[in-house]
Image (cartoon, rainbow, N blue to C red; front, side, top):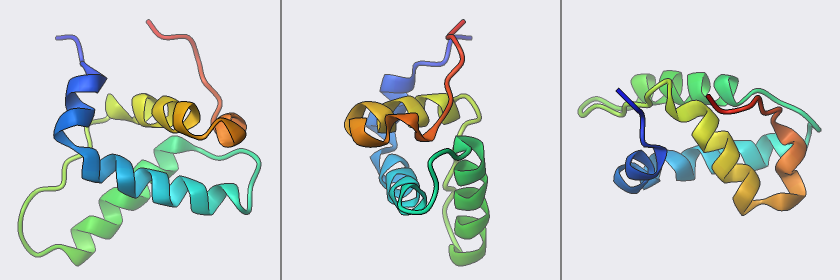
Amino acid sequence: MKFDFDVWLEQNPHIYEAFEREALSVAKRREHYSAKTIVEFLRHHTMITQKEGEWKIDNYATSGLARHFAKCHPTHASLFKFRGLK
C-alpha cells in the first residue's frame, strides 16, 4: 500500500493546522526539532482533551507534515531534517 500524503492532507486539514501551530511555536525557540515529537504531542493532547471522535494521525503522515510545513514556511525550512523519500 502506497501512502498518498496529498489525499490524506485534503481529508485532514485540521491536523496540518494543529501541526503547523505547534511547529511555529517551536520555531520561535529552537533551530531544529523533531516532527515526530510534534505528532506524538498532538496525539497525546487530543486523546486527553477529546471525549468523542477519532483524531488519527497516520505514522506515514509525519514526514509529509514536516515537508509541507517547510514548503509553506521557507524561513523555517531547516527546523526539520529530511531524509530521501523511498
